[in-house]
Length: 492
Image 1 (tube, one colour):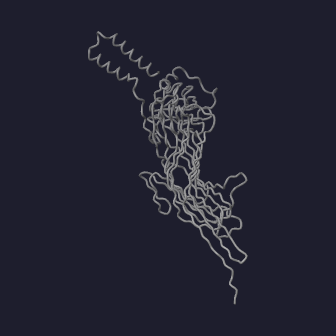
Image 2: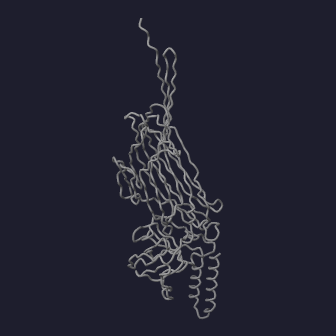
């Protein structure tokens, strides 16, 4: 309704102007004015803008977008701006805004309301932003997760020459308006920070146009990150030295951020009609479990988990002119559940893809998305004695926007071994022992949607929404054997 009212007013003003100057204006001028009026007044039924979703430039070229109060009220998207956030104080919400061409020394905004001078009328008029404007910025000093904020007060010029303002958190709907945006953007593996948590972790990556080879000469697909690890784990008590337990392998992934927004739907107020935020990509891993792992079920009922690497990235995607800062965290881990009785030497090669996230629509609200399609191949199998053991090589992931956590997920591909044996005997000394074993591959996927997803401008939900447990398992190999014993034949 805001757009229709605005367009009607523009048409009325144009007609009035033509009537006022009609006799003195030439016919060509009237034609030009009519054309201008038509250009300024698009048809009310025109489709909303479709914004491209791409990877944003970094450094000095990092984008900033500004939505004026008028644009926010009428549902228009933000426009590209020459402004930048020179500094930001999260505690007070104060920021210093400056033009990108200006040389501004970042200074910490004052955190005290009373210490700020009252701006004069001329200062307020000359300020590059006004109360009600919303600014979207890539990471900036004091705002490593980017900034999406509404100006609530213009304080005035600060000592660095920028304009100090007071802000509050804003929502994506205020800068994307009634536009549409959808896309999947690869995360640059070179921009992912990796912190090893155990000794022996090796990291390699391959970036488009800058191929790097992984350990042992392995060639990585472009856009992939690979982490190799090997670690000893607790061995069952009483096991021989030859049965020392260990895990070894690698995980290779090419993550992509999936984002969509639909401001043209049947939402009410400034809320969108649809939205999606998630993590998707290709996954490959190969790992082995050797030895006799100790019984790992502890008093709290959880199996042994060994985190071996922590990953973090803040990729900036761009929906039209609007920079959207995505916060991505992953913790890669081994997890072993065993009863301490079976000795194994098993290895699996696993490949596939995954997709986790949250989807919003007005008919259903926020709903979880958890999908995985993976297949495994056994590379080595050797099982001794009876018992059960399950080993996972997985990743805990969280994804959010502008420093919030929207989706958390736990993706855990695994190997599972079942071994059983039955012994029979008689009084004459004869007997037999039969045994069987089976090797399975599988994947567990779980997680939750967090209340911070309301940054899209959607209605608030009061609690975490579970993704729902996804469990898939497939047979890899199996075997069985029988041995017999007989009584000694007495000498004649």
